[in-house]
Image (cartoon, rainbow, N blue to C red; front, side, top):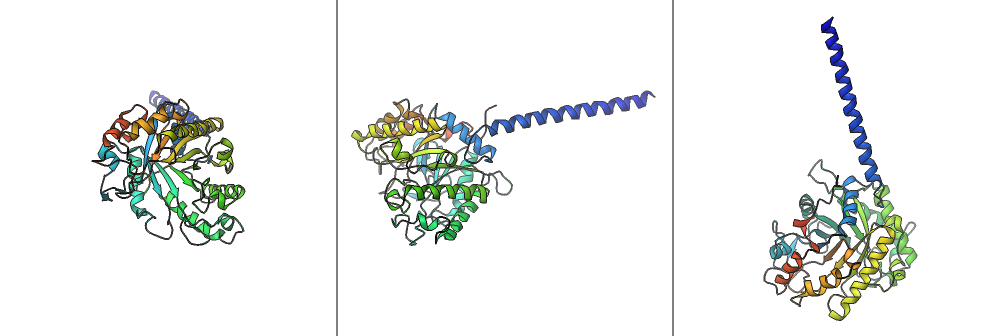
Length: 387
C-alpha cells in the first residue's frame, strides 16, 4: 500500500512540476511576444532581431552616434579583398559600427558596380553581424527603360509600376534583391536571418539618378516605393528588413516630405549631405538640416540618420573633430541621429575615410575617442532587447 502511495505521490509531483514549468514558460513567451509586438516597424512580422535593432537604434541616439563606412571590408586605398583588413580599423583600432554595401547589378552579374563580389559580400555581412555590426544596403539600379546606368536620367518610374512596360522586368530585379537578403543568415545553414537596412532610390530630390524628382512625379515615386516595400515584405515574405528614406539636401520639411511614401512604409528618416561638409561656412546648414530630420523623426516616432556624407580625400587635417563632429554634437537636436556614414575608399583619388599615413589619421583617432562617436568595439548588443 505504502509503495503504491509513493508512486501516486511521485506522479502527482511530476505533474505539478511539469504544469508549473509549462505555465511559467508560456507566461514568459507571451510576455516576450507582447514586448516585440509593441515595437512598430513597417513590417509587423519583422523578426525579433530586426525589431530589437530598430528599438536599439531609437535608444542609441540618446547616448551617441554610430560611425559607418561604405564597403569597409571589401577594399581600401591600397588593397582589395584581404582578410580582416579595414582602413578604418588600421587607423583607429576598431571596425566601424555600420557597414554600407551596394546591390547594383545584382541578378545579372557576380559582382556589383564597384567590383565587389556578391558572394564575398555575404561573407563580410555575416562576419560583421557576428561582431555586432549593422548592415545597410543601397541600390544604384541600372535604368530599366534604357539599360543605362543609374545616372542615365531618362525618367523610368512609370515604366516599372504595375501595368508599365517594364513592370515584369522590375519584379525580376526585386526577386534578385529578395533572394540576396533572404540568404543572409547568421550561420551558413540554419542560422536566423540577419537584419538589414534597405535604402533604395536615395537622393531622389536631386536630378542625377533616373528616379530623381526632375525626371518623375512625386506621385509616381511614392507609388514605386510602396510597391517595392509591399512586394518584398508581402509577396517575397522578407521579414528582416528596415526601410530607409534618404533624400539629398532640402531646405524645408515640406520639401523633405514631398515624395514621402507615408509612415507605414518608412522606418528610418535619412539625409545624404556631401554639400555642406566641405566648407566651414556651410556647416551650419548641415546642423540645420539634421535638426529638421530629427524633428520629423521624433514627430513620427522614427529613427533619424545621416545616411551618406563625407569630404573626398579629406584635405583638412582636423576635419573629423573640428568640422564634421563639432557641428553635429554641439546641437542638442541634430546630435540625436542614430548614425553617420561616410562613403567608400575606392582608390587613391577617391576616398572618404583615412588610411594609415593619411594627414587626417591622428584627428580621426581623436574623433573615434570622442564620447559621442560609437565604433564597433563600443557597440552595445543591438539585436537583443535588454531585460
